[in-house]
Image 1 (cartoon, one colour):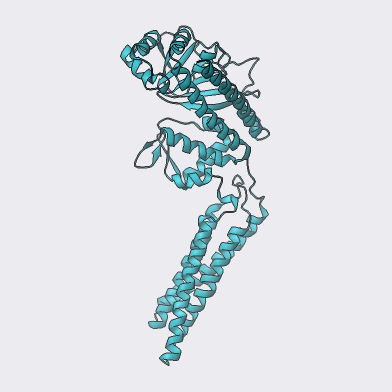
Image 2: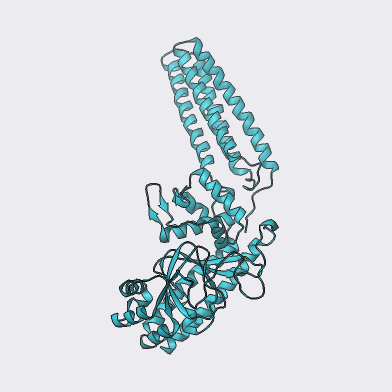
Length: 450
């Protein structure tokens, strides 16, 4: 028992140190990057609720906020968590009888950072976020907890004030076990302390990942990783994809990743536009998990990796090369083996497939890969323009080559217009590509954002 308590005490100190590092990392990430007009009001001395945020003390809850819950339901709620699952039935029932249940509206505080630890809390419905207030007066979200998860227990066991605040993210019900009852049960059953130590160990691993992410990952990778972690832990599979079962505000997402709400809005807007995620009634649904995982791994388009657009350029160029080689082989066979000179338009189509289709597309693909990407926050950057150039050149080359082959076999006036349209499309696409690349190299390159 003593050894286990020392272990949980050591783990708690480590977790507290990591929380301090994460909070400092969030402040550093936001330093100089926040529009002052969006700053929150500074906090006064000591932890206090922000203006407009309600808090409930650990005493009697406001009228109408105490929920009547049957003892059997409380027992079920306690047994759903590994901390209490190994206790005898009578012990769990005694804790359930001593417990109380409170309900909270969105943004209500269950307790504040620095409050005396008088309750171990179990989320029975809704969501609770564990928040620390930085010295700059901003929130740093350390965890999001859902039904069945506990919080505040370690502070109760150690008889220390709560190290962070707990705030309802949506209409939430919390089952509260008094400190005296929990300490007495842990003294009779050391397994409670052991399970809490395991819980802290899992939290430490998550905290280590957060510290690493804040140190080296760009902001978009942190946002993507946070969305994936929440979806994999709490998401429900739907026809559209993996849906978060709760409303996650842009502000909460920014607070969890150490960035500004403006940056979170811009990133999510890009993902919504690209179809990586969709918004269904205020709840995010991850549609393309693979693409989001690539971003979370720190492999966005800015990183110099071969992007999907470059791959299309390369693949299309080889398709044109293969078509040109097959046509060239047929021309050689017809001329030297069958002693039949092919139509002039066949030669023209052969040249266009090789020179424009293969060589030009290859050059465009390599140039797109080699030139630095501008920062995505640059309002002058238009990624859809690069996509349009690809399609204009590819379609124009294919149309022109097909029309030349067809006209060589069966001349028709309409085919001349198709050939002319294809040639104009090739010329226009090439000019558009040159202009786009010129603008691109004059923009500041994308830099890793933290």
